[in-house]
Image 1 (tube, rainbow, N blue to C red):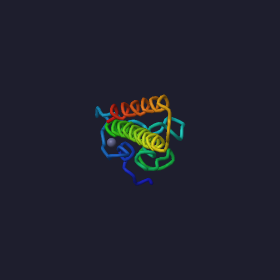
Image 2: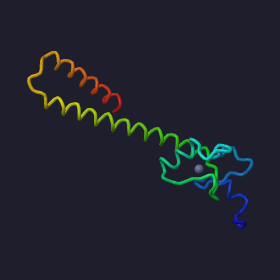
Image 3: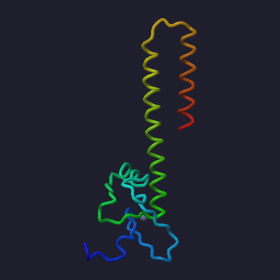
Image 4: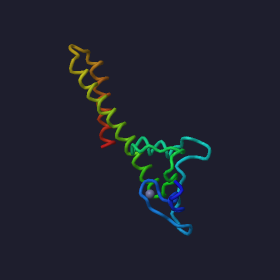
Length: 126
Ligand SMILES: [Zn+2]
């Protein structure tokens, strides 16, 4: 790969933006020094399904804008998965109550309180 231009490795791995030496945008290294993994590399692989390796010949930096978007997307992804689990638990729980017959009023009251609590969580999330 001796024909690559010197600026090739300064290009953002995700959006191809290039910032010269006097640019104010920060270029963040994908990998921590002497490590094969970093939070950034894991987020790229996990959220974008792009394989990155400290051994590959592609640029090893991302721009600040992409790092910010990636961080926001990761947070959004985590929230979505958490919401999905909560919704599934709510449906399972509500479903389990439909199957109960002849339950005591105390038992019902306790479970209805739980449903209200789930509704509150759902309402807060939505
Ligand atoms: Zn970028």
